[in-house]
Length: 471
Image (cartoon, one colour):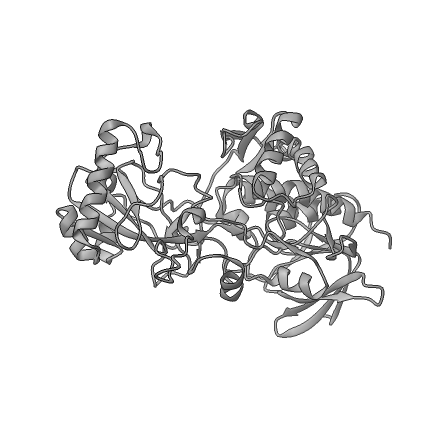
């Protein structure tokens, strides 16, 4: 292979955002190349359920997104929300324009916010396998149909910047060779977040440790390259974080979500600390409390305490998502995980406390108090919804350790409504664009389906604007 490659638009990262950006730039008449650090594409897009955010009404959808994004993160520019809302109105139409069928599977994560009735989560109707979800299968095949060049096992090491500060390509390591891929129009960064970069997690997130559910390729490469180019950075502390179980023999965590409601969460001493049924993406806000007296995070890890009803209801882990999909099959009755030592059992709550090292009196009182709330129908401590309150009364009883486990990070280079990466003063870094979870617009609250919705929305914007750059 030659030491230098010339192309018009270079896309760094072959996930949902990279695929959409490449398709858009190609269809605008430019030559496009995608480089991917892993041996195949897909990233977090393929390891998710494949759902994407759509809006049924622009004005009410805009109202919802404004309320969601500005409620707890007020520095977000209105133009960004407007652009996302405008494009999300077309997400379903764009996907279906390729002959795909889609179906709705959910709505607003925070239905109490104004405009929530306009929010819809959709999926591509089709087969999901351990190798590919239906969305990734569709979008990857569209890249292949266009014969867009994809270089796998080709991590970008740095951006090429000319004397005027314009980004003109990237230095790539491929098969032990250093290759300069020169992009005459623009470079689009779509290489994901920093879920597997321990240094970044320790410095940018509150709480430790955070484990990860998605692609091990997400080690913050795009963030580091953008920083070296002088980019402003935003949303580094904002993440989508369910609770998961981390086994030592597996690189990624398992997303834990019981199929029955007879469970509670307790901190290390055995005290219940929150309503257990908050939005799945926001559990980090429940566990990242720091105890300034004990100088520790008493809820990392926390425990899920559950009864025999939950064990029999089905697997605790959702194995349809995450990097462990296809690598491990969680047992339907959770017995294999008990035998593995991942789940601890006890005939009584006191027995369970003894086996887990929790104070017997504390855990017995915690469960007793919760069961009393179930009987009265009112959770006086944490306002868990009445219809979800089911007592723990069917022994044996069980405990599994849980950690905050990243679906994805939102932080990265700040971009504008044209998907252009910005300097700290708000001016544009010439010919550098980004899309996807790398520098996402989402603040402290995240809407499910929002990142793939953003891959579609800002992937199209980035591809269109990059293709329009003058030679």
